[in-house]
Length: 236
Image (tube, rainbow, N blue to C red; front, side, top):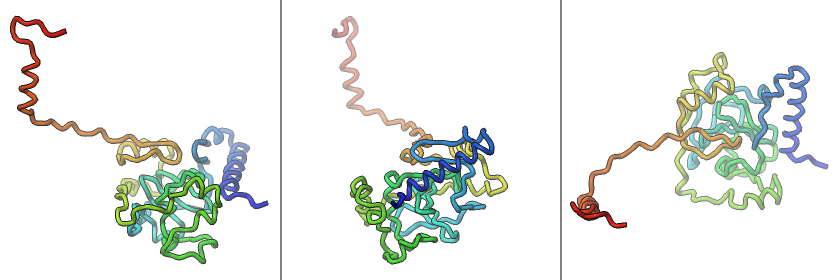
């Protein structure tokens, strides 16, 4: 019986966690389980030694990395990669990566045309380069039932792209921060308001600036009329 791709990736993550625990018990405490599964140091076939060159996908609020030999995208404040028939996400260009179930991958990531995958899997080969992958065909009717409108949107008015986290240029492989420092740097340098990510995380949103409004003469007159006159008691 064929094993579902997500289950196979999840089993691999669990096996990696067990191996890490046997080698170093402290590593088990670092395993993060949420919407996705993160195993620090887990290899998923991706190693990006420096901040990548990212180019907008025309007509989509998504960027891709044309110079890399991996399927790397950036959307809504998160990096996304498709490797070994599974989707992973991270807020930093080289992880740690979180395994994301197919039901939780954002629509616009799934809508990216086949031609923008730098390392397309074999089942992409007979599909049009100008259309998104046929995920419903690949993941089956249950997934299609849970995501019926994933490939329907107003192509003439896509949402704006999120700003790129260019501050990460200052952190190549030699200075690449750990997960705790990554969060600190994100909160300091990247204030893009976004939806909760696939790991259930959400960056702090910038507080709206207070805008002082000019006084309205009619409103001031109504306020004066409500005030009791001298010698009168206020209405109960």
